[in-house]
Length: 459
Ligand code: HEM
Ligand code: HEM
Image (cartoon, rainbow, N blue to C red; front, side):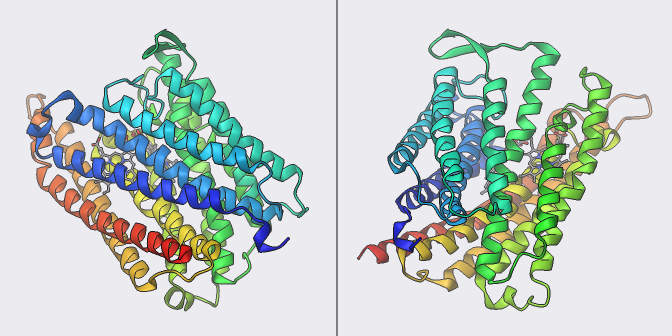
């Protein structure tokens, strides 16, 4: 198979889409971070925190995250199966449909149309469009696998299969609803059942977007960009199957101390702790791949993205099971500690891995070196510093918040009311905003670097 027979236009299209939605999602993120210490800015319903928060989460999770994943998947799939995209026109339709869906999603959420189920806020017509889009994507994934010229299935392909199948199941089951009109529907589930299905979905949609396909990228791009073979294929497969075995049982750790039956909560805690093993199986595999070649962290600009990325994943997968324990969750739930957890994963692990994957793919497919490695290095340090300051500030703020909510006077009454606790966090929110700006500048440099590299290759 020669390099020319692969179809990379679709990869480039999704790279552009990812960068576009990343910038939009971050602008909204910065705005809502600013609103947190300037609540007067909730001027109209259209600018209210409640509406914009979902534009931020959908724009970044579904817009940036999924587009990055589609870009990398279409690239990895062709390389690892040694088969060009089987249905290129379908793939192009996938690209257009994806962008139309995300634009309509942002618009409808902005207009206040929402099912109110977290990460499943889109109303039913858009849900149907998402399912159609996913089937189109799955057709190409499975057609490539069936027609593959490479018999061996490298671990990244397993992660891609797991994502493709699981997201379809999760999305359809949790979004089953009864429409009342074109813009409004009600969930098929009610009460505790609704909560249980919702968080089975919520946890796993996060996992099968922000973990599983990101691991597929990590396992593929770390060896190819470092020129070092993966430390252990056996460990990668054991980690994969044990991750998949455990992941889907843990959703109820989002529902600790609620009316959900206690045994379901306990099962979720047990599987969450179990998850440390497969997660660290991947972390250790990454570290050992660099064994004896740690100087590449300095000499190869991509390696530090991957290694810091997997390190944040490792930290995230220790923090997660810990904060899911009943006693700790009683303290941390609803606090900014969890917001810190989310953003170490998204601004650290996810962004770093997707960034490095784009930096690897774009020069390869445009046949030109990256516009500027220096800019890529500045991008790295800005997003690292921005993310660290962002998350550490939220952890400290979260501890203060939890402590204030629990504080009681000698007569047993609460020492602080809720508003006191929010107002006392303003300094933390100001630091978070500043950290967000640092991170955002890093992202702008990233987008610029990729854009110029592609433009130069077209001349
Ligand atoms: C072993 C792995 C992990 C476990 C056991 C875990 C556990 C948890 C728990 C218990 C919560 C809920 C805290 C609360 O609301 O009280 C949570 C929230 C969250 N985690 Fe993790 N986590 C893990 C890894 C990750 C990773 C790698 C990401 C990727 C970014 C991630 C993203 C999130 C998100 C987005 C939320 C917020 C969900 C919401 O909207 O309420 N987690 N996690
Ligand atoms: C400049 C960078 C960023 C800023 C300023 C920012 C800001 C925010 C703010 C203010 C919230 C709401 C917190 C709250 O309700 O108290 C939030 C939530 C969230 N953000 Fe970001 N964000 C940034 C980057 C990202 C990135 C890169 C992603 C994903 C790729 C992301 C995904 C999320 C998610 C999933 C939540 C929901 C968390 C939960 O419900 O627990 N954010 N963000």
